[in-house]
Length: 383
Image 1 (cartoon, rainbow, N blue to C red):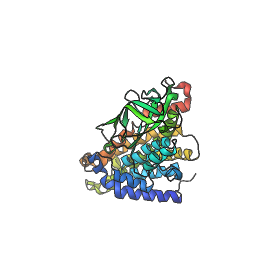
Image 2: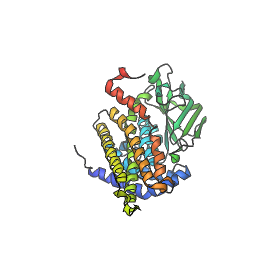
Image 3: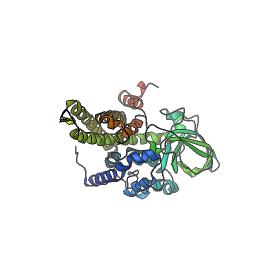
Image 4: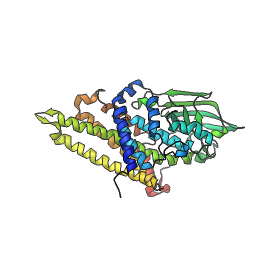
């Protein structure tokens, strides 16, 4: 086992760290107040090669390995985990679909996304089904050389600002999961409308719903073959769940660093707070748990780089990363006293932003079902 970065990974880490600390962290709270996706930062992320880094060079990306992406993901999250979610989760999931498309799809959807010229979204969840994605009811009916799409999608990150969307719909309503297909959807088509939510956190990501009323798309916007959509997206979650966990760990790490510095300087009863075990011991515990979770994240990514399955490990870190990060950031907020409770410090925003990941890409309960399935076998599933 090797724990040192390669030369390439060190370069990526340094570039991501510099961008996060100089460009993202100082304006983290500003983006929340504006409640608007920052296209200028998105473009810079594309120029730096940080959007869907695994996309091969011939398709507009840089072809980075999964571990290398994880390193960049964690560093970017220390500046703004919302931008990290956009570049390493939403774009990562969308790239898996767009790569399965024709050259026209790659040219018009994938490359502009990777270069930071178009903002993506992924539309899977529906009002009546989230975890049970195979139960979706949005339909795509073939009509000549086109598909006519009708339905409603919900809980879509970045839909309020998206230019392009990876959408999943039923092409065969009787076939269950095998009847789900994936489509590339430009957001300027007739019959498309959106509605955004007032969320607790992630306010710069404009999450919301998508409505499709007889939306007509050409058949070449089908990604892969009919009926392959569910398989495509389920395998992609084994990647995105790890990146979500690392994003949470990045937010927790910077919060702990800030708190350690603060408790060294803040005095009470003529002693720095850091001398009290009620302060130092909880921080020691958080550092230990988060480091263990981080190592499991990189094992999960290492498995992918080796071409091996990582479903169980991805599910493990998906519930561990956000939970333990929420715990750590909550304690950091309390240790800052009443100042931590104000929006003058980034702690309360990080807490709210990380809490959203406890739901995204499957709740902790779903993750534990996946772990149980991988451990006991499918015959012991509760459904």
